[in-house]
Length: 220
Image (cartoon, rainbow, N blue to C red; front, side, top):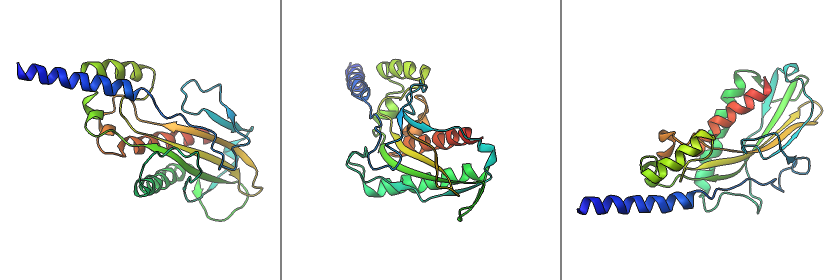
């Protein structure tokens, strides 16, 4: 009897947390990013992962080298880090630098000097949400959470009580400093990526993995 009551209590708790988890952080065109004046709502992005974008016709195959600037942690008033610590922000920025450099290295030569056939990429970490400890994982197995996460998985949406990461990408022609492409994106793991629910920053780093792959897909 006591076990049954306890299970119902856990289910009620998870149901309430699931409903609360439905409200997620939506990216904005951050005023402190140099390209924000150029970006507009991206109506072609049905996923909602890239709500704002600026693009020009570019033959990416004409570029063979890339300068990857150090990741910038956004300090503007419209940041979306909540109460995340500076230590966690620095951890995400360092991971982002490494992960994106690895991806770019598979397609370009990473260089430090501007020149022809060279891109310059600036990454700005503008927001992040940490996982909800314990409940984020349990909500994948509770009945209420399983229903909601099942729907989210089918639509490639966010899972309950799972973290995410938001950042901006600005791509320039290194020789002319002309802005070629810019966008703001929110990335998060698949709703049933259980591994990404373990650890406060696991979902955010999984989102950065997805983001790096998405950038490389654009540049091929």
